[in-house]
Length: 225
Image (cartoon, rainbow, N blue to C red; front, top):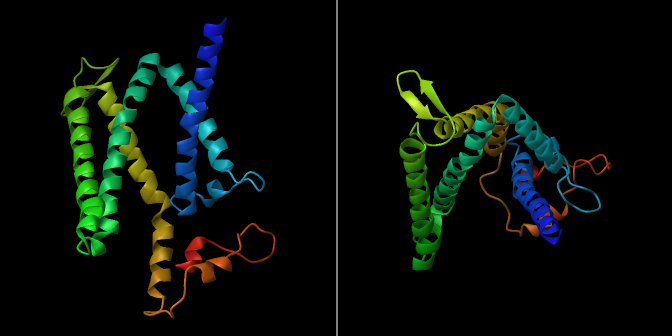
């Protein structure tokens, strides 16, 4: 009985710790208007993401039911393909760090090492693992539980098909959801003055009022950019 209790509590803890980073990622994306801003709402008392947490949970349940209904083999391959997404976005994070700090890389050797060299090498390493796994290991028809006969390619491992297919679907959704926002953000930046009076960021942000504060005013953090 003790062993069963330990396994059950471990399973519950694993599901909770798994949903936390994904819910907060969705929250961050919504705050930056990559997805609907409703998912950026937080609980008034606990200050934790609400819509993003519930939404991620419902989508996960629906995804599990759908794949289980189609085939348990597809479900197994979809679980293994998660590694491709992880390697891909970790690689992007490394390159994004280099790009974000590109203007200060020559300021000191420390900046170059920790803001340029190491993140860049990490991004290259992640992309190499992504390529090797997607096109060599996972692409083997004998790897995983399923394989699919693709036009002009032939039999391909189901893990590669599911993993790359999910990433391509994500690119399409990204372009659709950010199309209007990208244009509005470009317009906002074009209207900014070329020079601003010296002041700390605390002063303007202290006047920020959330849009749902029922005070009749408020807006997005992008109003301060």
